[in-house]
Length: 315
Image (cartoon, rainbow, N blue to C red; front, side, top):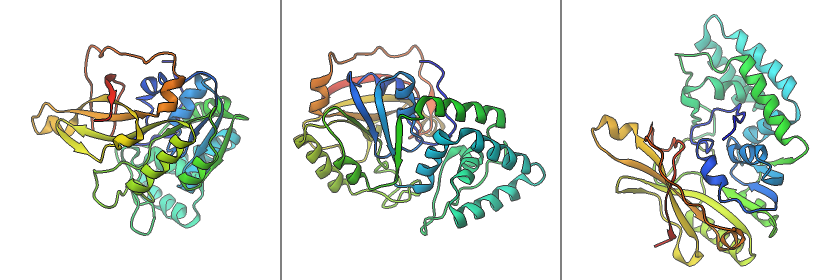
């Protein structure tokens, strides 16, 4: 896959799995809709390959949605702001980071968010119970170099400017706007890993409500793809989507987790990809893949480029 710009380092991003996911896109997509956009990795990859005429990029995390909008609409100004902030850290970089974090939590300025995502531990967002960003800085590095960041910002802007709209709405509101020529790609808050509350997200979603919303999409003939549950070895994380939705389920291998390696286990991590019946009917064929020659190691929920393992109806 061609070199695609990505200014946001975001744990759990589907950037590495994009080559697999894009193979299930139908032809003639009018709008690619991402209700849980995150870093918008799928929209960026799809735009690079001209797989959709327009992109609807939404995330309930408003500073993140506004950051994505700013990247597309004002990349030069954002690059200059980032460079100035990045240069300020040379001295006491840890204290500088905490000062920027306090400013962000007070102002919700999306430009500050870009710096924190580049500088925080493993690009991993964390929020406290009050919704305040509370991740620590990575003390081993200073974050993305300004020159590299500028190139990535400009690259994403070139791909999406004039072809994208941005919002910070509840996912069900975004669903309501979908039409039959569209394709919805969903990567909702991951279930089953962090208990009742996942600190990586400002808010979670109800499994039952989500299933009901998918049923409505089915009733309206809307095409969609969902990245949802997963497993490591025989241990399943999250509930499978129910059989009555009549979805195709693909298990995508994400490699052997670092956690398993440390424990001396040979456990492979998988993620599920679900295709709606309407989408399957739009595909000319169902892709099949051979595994790569080697399996890379990844932390659980940090998937790497791997392959389709199975293609089957949900059991």
